[in-house]
Image (cartoon, rainbow, N blue to C red; front, side, top):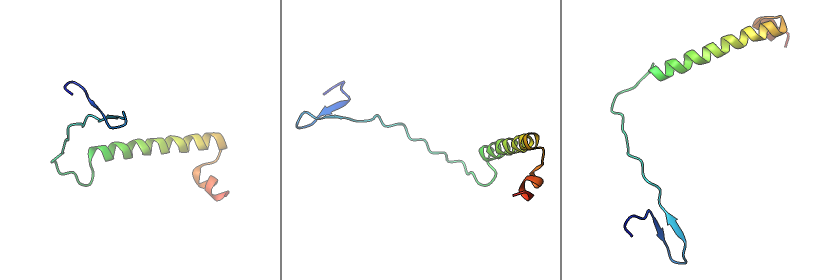
Length: 70
């Protein structure tokens, strides 16, 4: 069995085991405004702002006019 990463069970069934990844535990306290959350919020805000500009260019009306016409 040396060198093999699989086991043949009864009935000639192949049982290959996954290689377990090393566990990593981040001991640093993260609460509130993390760097990842701020990056994500900023990117979503940029997408929303550009979407509003595109909406105004395509329809000729701003967001308030578009919502009021619904």
